[in-house]
Length: 369
Image 1: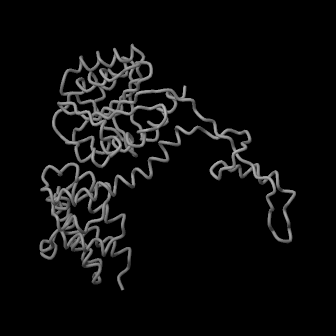
Image 2: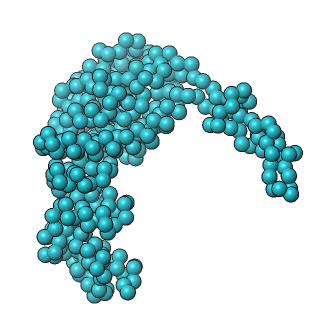
Image 3: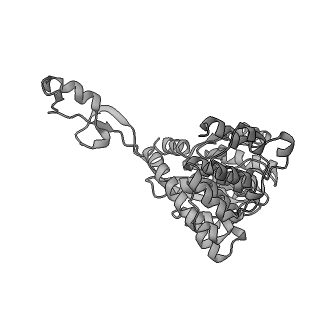
């Protein structure tokens, strides 16, 4: 029987580590699946790790997907699929109808679909939409509660007459009913439950304008911007706009309530004219002191930087809140042009990176003032 730790090292290193010991049937299958993918690295021979064999070369993409789903845990499957589409650009994972009929949706595949949907025929696009719908549905479920909680107020430390489970005050209830504890039964009888009150924010109408850079490096932020806009849509006191841009500006506000349709219309890649997008946002503003413009971009301006800086300065001076977000996703790890970002900060924009929940909290704080 193969030692699990030795087998793990054998799978990491590939054929050069054959002296570690023989692999069982499943181990050999895992080894072939890993060779099919990582054997593509041209420098592996020089590093004496994971050289591909003939068995791996004979696998089709469908065979490989079937094998990894049988042989590896879910987290590993998603990592392998992500490397396939992002590191090795194996596009048939998301452009082949036979593959799309069997593959399990995950965020890496959503990114791949958005980046390759222009290559798909109508039938493949229909199948790919299943991935978009499934991943967006999961994101909506996770983010909607977080976003909407920012607008429902915080629990206050005063009693409430309204008895709702979400506002149950466990600590105060236990203290108030300790006299009803029955040692023989090891049970506490609650005669008087206590609840928190919830402070409701007073809201007036605000405009929240999301400007989203469609360049290829911003794909995660594009996805989360679409879902965030959908979560903000219809909240009291908020009018949400979503505008995508590259060298042109496309107002997608009419699709905000359907993030799947919105994402299927986004065209990733191309140049970047941030100044034009910000100038368009300026034309949407009705009450400058009740407007938030969130510019989501890596700030690599292909247009006029001076025009961008001047337009942002004008927005700030008229009382508009301007956010420059180098990333809007769950990781909020940005890569961006620091010089342009600093110049935006110098004229009054708040520059940084946020998760969708942090953006929602910022909006709620402004709206509730």
